[in-house]
Length: 224
Image (cartoon, rainbow, N blue to C red; front, side):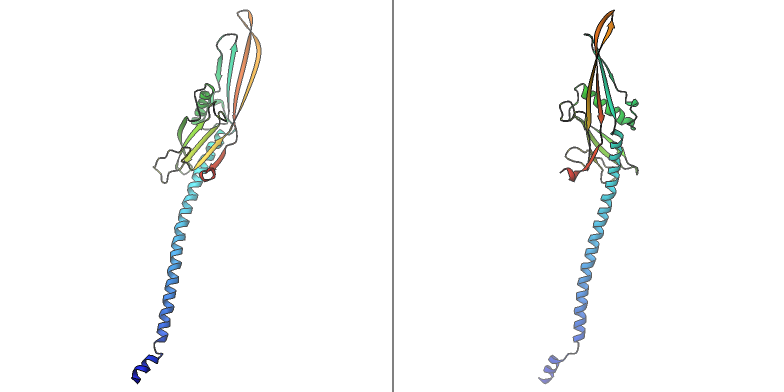
């Protein structure tokens, strides 16, 4: 009995128990630190990828914005007497503000359709832009028709696929970035007299000018 009591009151091995307890606490703390570090590393990698995608996308959008900003489209309509009006459309190549050949042609084609009442704000065209690093940015653009709130204004939506080779079709409800380019419309009429077959005939020259202003770029979450 006395031997049992001595063993129960003995302090031998207490230091080992304390060391084991301390080791267990350190192990738990270390596990928490490693878990947090791994989670942060994953977030940083994802953030880096998001930033890279943003720079690629924004560079392509700014390229389009700069191409269209300040562009001028003009239509001259000359009507002499009761004869059919003679219409002259602006030559896309004569507009130095547009550096991209495709955009020159397309912009004026859109404006011509709007002028003739053949384009509404729901009619779109899709195209792609190559970024400096070769990534393809997909875009869908609209030009508002005469029935829209802002005729001739351009609204474009952009998407960058998760990886090269994928395809994407952005629209008003599915996009990463949006570009809105307002258009200012002016109308001028000049009346004069023209001699036709020996007779003075009234002639009216109507000049319609569309000037594209500074584009506004926004991200999807900003428009939500």
